[in-house]
Amino acid sequence: MSPNSRLPHLSHARSLLTQDIRAVNERGEEQDASIPAERALTVYVDKRELVTLMTLGAHPEWLVLGYLRNQHLVASLDDIASITVDWEVGAAAVKTRGGIEHIEERTAKRVVTTGCGQGSVFGDLMANVDQICLGDARLTQTTLYAVLNAIRLQESTYKSAGSVHACALFQGDQMLLFVEDVGRHNAIDTIAGWMWLQPPAVQQGGDKLFYTTGRLTSEMVIKSAQMGVPLVVSRSGITQMGLEVAQRLGLCAIGRAINKRFLCYSAPERLVWDAVPAHDALLKE
Amino acid sequence: MSPNSRLPHLSHARSLLTQDIRAVNERGEEQDASIPAERALTVYVDKRELVTLMTLGAHPEWLVLGYLRNQHLVASLDDIASITVDWEVGAAAVKTRGGIEHIEERTAKRVVTTGCGQGSVFGDLMANVDQICLGDARLTQTTLYAVLNAIRLQESTYKSAGSVHACALFQGDQMLLFVEDVGRHNAIDTIAGWMWLQPPAVQQGGDKLFYTTGRLTSEMVIKSAQMGVPLVVSRSGITQMGLEVAQRLGLCAIGRAINKRFLCYSAPERLVWDAVPAHDALLKE
Image 1 (cartoon, rainbow over the protein chains, first blue to last red):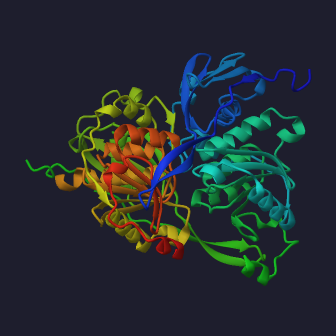
Image 2 (tube, each protein chain N blue to C red):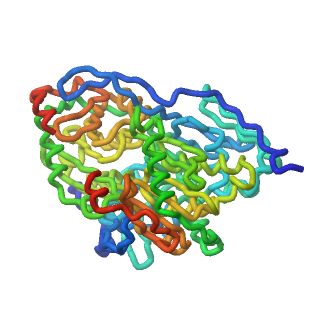
Image 3 (tube, each protein chain N blue to C red):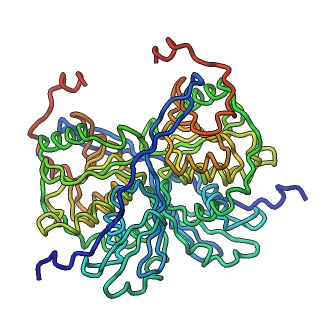
């Protein structure tokens, strides 16, 4: 049986990602503005309500799949028969093949993480964080700069409406997927869901790089590690917990990455300094 | 009995808000960097574990108090005998005077909001959002500019370490409280907790203004309304749900507020245009 022969059936209706509104500016003049869409999506697993996610709504089926995966509620794609999203009622109906054991207790413990409320994911993973092996992948500075440039050129809801976080998955300097959402955790869950649906070579994260516009919180580092991705890059900074987890995992966390500048917070041995910029190149920015 | 005679006993040990680390920059050189502290604080109510909050740790006792308040777990300050924070074990012990009824079911339903995972707060408040009356407070442009200037001049962890969100409570152009945290929801919960401990004139929010560096999500708008504050100002933008709730409440939501510029997204009738800036003043920025 081929790995894809039992892929779950995923379906949802497309929806607008931005809303045009009228606002009043500092001169008292009405002006057009664009804001990101934000929808409540209530997830039902075998007709039982699980959680309500606030989302931009670009890829709700991948989001739900990645949420179930990152919450350790489903161990394998085979467990899921279908995910059907209906924006009319703001619901995602998940049909499993065999049900989810002890779903009550497994969704009971709550940890409000910095980046944020992803239930038990923090507690769970910190418990077995040392079991994760991220391999020995390295990153050349040239590739890092190519990644940052690809992000710079990417068309996005952020450019048109702001107020969203973006995440992207890279293999070398090739962008495999770019996802935005009003919730940073939704964006990475969506990537996790998408990865699960790909061929084995894309599913395994050892040779991948994860980019986020958001801060490198413990949650972002943990979820990246859960996907097996050893390289995480952010335009923003890192929090203390994020740093501690990254160091413990040997994950290379790079922040403040804009243009030619960046700060490597952990595992600098994974970086290959093949493109050290000249001082004047930095000054010109 | 005076309203303050039964104030709960609050205690915690002070803790560092930033951590100095060594990072490697784009030239391969080690350099000093400062990152915000981030601590796991597990809240126990009458010895029962409730939730774990990731926090900067500046005002954990106000944070816990505000969390309990915004989650509708305690209706009155009188219900709480003491909150004791012990950073050695990362725990906040809450002693109630009469226990919290049905705490299991009241903390069971989870909504992962955009800004984020504050449990049932969204569902709960949307149910009775129409019962909230925010009064008829107005805001002059002059006062708004004074507020933005006060924020600009405020010393902050953000300036030294980045990666934190700031919230502030104003009465007119006077800053009553400035709070930062790694989680935006923590900052506003901390303000809610602090307000509860103040004299009635400070507790009531009708003449207050709430400032946040974060996006105006539904959660921020809802929590501001819960505190009775009709004016919310942000450096950032607004999400669709945030706008819908603000319009429904008649709450004045102002975003993109930097220097002399801003966008009023809802209830512009609350704004008094007494300081319309000259075009050249805006161009000079």
